[in-house]
Length: 176
View 1 (cartoon, helix red, strand yellow):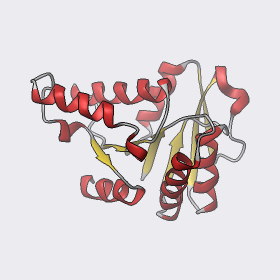
View 2 (cartoon, helix red, strand yellow):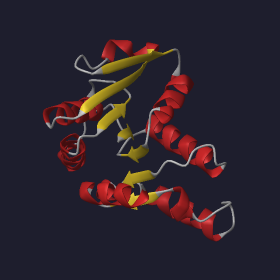
View 3 (cartoon, one colour):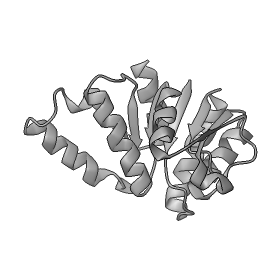
């Protein structure tokens, strides 16, 4: 399975990196391919290292603006002109989308894939690994949108939230 992962390119505290590394090891050991922003920086670089060490494949989708941070050991590297093209390529190559902790770029990516799914422009599972309750605020807001009629279909058809890396894969297994 090609699993597109949205996450931070910053170096983070171990409470965030340890679950991300466990997720990456499970991804690689499961014979899956990591499709990600292609960076060697921060959490992105850690993911790539762990997936590769566990025997998984790497497909990096870089934007020209950040090419200097490219991961040198990717099995395939794709260069895009801008962030919009990169997001489209990341989704195109995905069988599933997983969201780890991240900043504004990650928030932009998750809201875009949710909006596209809302309009039935893709049907790929989206799973958020809610490490340390990082995405709880977003989940609560989405639940309110669902309860108050702002979503065209039930929230659990659009996105699911996991508490552990193993739960991410359990959710992906039930959605395929």
